[in-house]
Image (cartoon, rainbow, N blue to C red):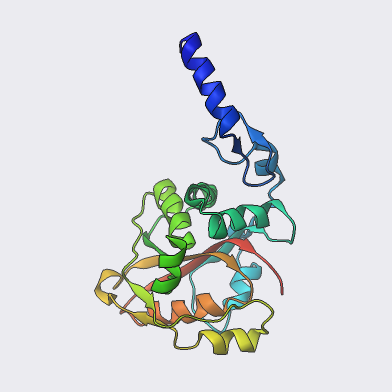
Length: 233
């Protein structure tokens, strides 16, 4: 790059600095969107390596899943919370793709994609997606799909009704809030296939359970579940 080009690039960076979505520090290159310190500080769960991990136990006896996992632990005022906030409320779609790639690499490494046919994002209600401009779970799925070389399907299931926030609700209240809120729209697309249902955060699993129950209405479908973060109530 020429001296003039370098100066111009530096001026642009000065006027429009790229900052890390995890900690807000200045980035020399915006391509990564997350600084190395934040990446290294993400508390990984390792759940994908263990049967009957805490996420699998959520669905035990409630939903027949092949596997279930979450990539990182969620805590308040943490790097993980900042990243997910930037994804959901900061308009930073590319963060979702990056988080999805983080998830996809270990899942591929441990063989989750051996018979996986598709990745399905937990759907948003169309009005909420229109307001936000995108579905954060779909962005995560795009990263997972790229890493695991499987397609992302967005037309299989839809959310019929907009729901109140799940925050501060008990497990029973969360289930009642989500009951009958999803509808299977394209069963032939997943018949006799193994699909991965993806969300950004799993807490009680009520939303994923409600959506997963609809997906399991398709003939011969097998279901796995993954979220970027796992949090306790």
